Image 1: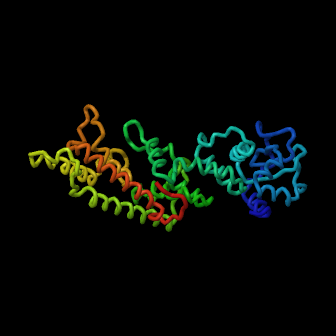
Image 2: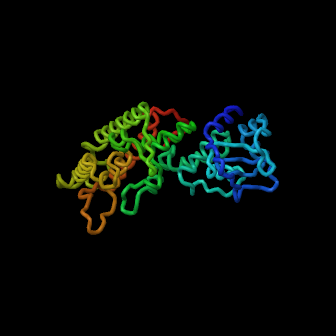
Image 3: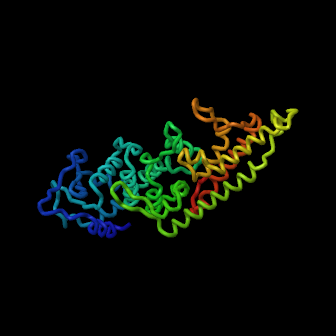
Length: 352
């Protein structure tokens, strides 16, 4: 971005001050030895040109090239008008000054604004840190995804990500806007778990703003959703239907035919439960193949809660469960590796 670009965008988007509206001095971010006034909306900040120029090559160019004498000085300092809101600019300046700004404690709108600003002003260190914070919830590894999903599951075992996590459409829009492609695969997969009707409608924020995917992105989600469903179907056919007991099965020497088939019967029950997807509906995850594959192990090992009907009437022996568990781990890692390809997103350093 050039100095003229920033000048144009600032003039075009900054809300004009009304005649009776007076600029307000920010109560915190005004320094007595400052040599620059940054004006954002109705508020101004007295800061140091050297610090801004050190962190941002864009601001360095702007402050070198722009004729600051054309605008009325503020408290004797040259004034730089920007398009950002006072709240966003305050967070941006706190980050540049090294204040204790806990990014994880900020709401999504504030974090998104910081990412946009750090991208616009080319503050690479801040940009990397904001992306790192967002990647905790939109990760590139399966282990991080599992931690994220655990945090979004309440004490009753029901998956309820909102309002803890922003809607994935908002993440997709932000990641595409600032070219943070590493956030896209997990966001696309998260979105693919919604019903097609919900995908078409989009997301309406609390303030009534509607966010919808463009046609290309909508088709990416639908194609990825179909690919994930096919992978899940293949998993059921290859790993569950007619599954043979482990060579170390504890029932392999049982003299009774039914007892000898106990583990096979247990895996048939798992297959039936996965096809019915009862656990998915109960846990609010009825379109989540990655969860369903993991749950095929959990439904064999979870403890039955008192007063609740048993969900594991048939249990495979420990040897068969361990054998099957290793298969599930490998399958889920393979599933995770394929997500960028399914949703047509090119990223580096993606893996289980």
